[in-house]
Length: 550
Image (cartoon, rainbow, N blue to C red; front, side):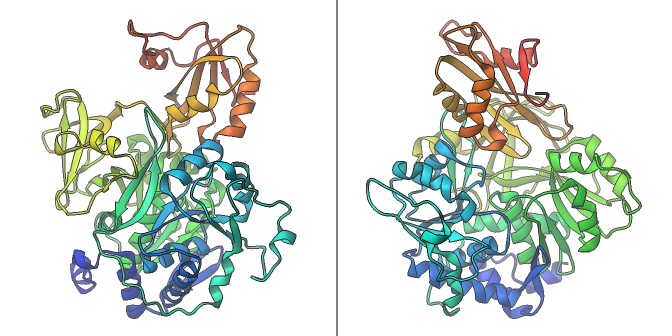
């Protein structure tokens, strides 16, 4: 393995950019299959050539080196082509969650200041709904698998237009990229340049755009390669969305760097998971706790141990899930890990260390990590709970800051350490054990949810005087949290069902509260601050409406 890494110059940070890596692999393994999605495949050579055409087409549509380009697409080959094309152009890929709508989508598109956005046709109406609130968008490119000809009349194909009081937004079909040449004149970006912006949950404000340099992106992939022992013979099965770092960088980019093969599913299906693993002879995959839990809930079958899957990443770490996965599917290696979009993956478990529920030890070649007092920042002793703080050893191996939010960047970087807001403790061997979130953030099925944004959406509902959104434990193992809101209305008979129906039209599906509790008042401190920790302690009460049972 070490020989292969040296041969491919994987530790030469001067070549740590997506454009460099795809060019290298297109030369070394041009005819080898790189990506398969829904039984359609791209070789490394085809992926490189298509990326060149895409980059030229984006340039024709006004995208320049360093420009943000917002991409709102499902998993698929077009997503991959755009990802690689933006990298070859040297533009910044702004990955937009496909569940975003309304104010969530307005905030992201205005905060990133993208003039060009690429969206799936099925999301175009969401753009139409908010178009007058968008300050920067000038052009929309539509990805539509039903469009067979790039010369189709858009007014015929789509039965609504994009009105805008402040000017016209141009619309065109993305598939015209096929008419472009694949030779480009753009200088590839360097490891120092920002290659991606991903939005992560705010706690006391809107979601924050994480500025991710190419070195940071590369280390997501390199970490997977080292700790999964990934090489060119592996087949990586990817079911997580590519608009998140786990799917795009920990899995797909790791596959690219290793010269392996990626199997990309448009969406996760628990019933199809094992049959896909067998069909594609997958050897590696990543799981959020929810994915593993749903897979384990499937009926036992003859193929449970008749597959090639040898390694699986697991986050959040659960000793129970790990034991059940190993026992049922005979997976030889479960890799526990801890990370964030901002800080990469500084913790991985090791094959020769048996520490149930541990997130692992620090990847000390590239990162430093401490457990500190969340108020004083003084280092905690072994076994004492404190806040996880992290900083990189590799220049640009970390986020560069929050986009257009310098105050939030400074706040997170107190005393030269990035403060994660997560509580944990470390044992004498350096193994870290996650405890809980210090910050007021909700994590549901792999999505970070800003309580501020949920509360902001509910506050617009008529008759709402006060609201608090917070996390309660999920009954499904591995799914982390469920969203709960407590509301105080102007009248006691406020319609809770109407609140839930309203939120379903305003929030991404993952952020819609499962539980709503109508209260006469919220617990507060003497200074008037809502005491969410008391609400969390009370959890599910008799007066709580559970919409999973409605």
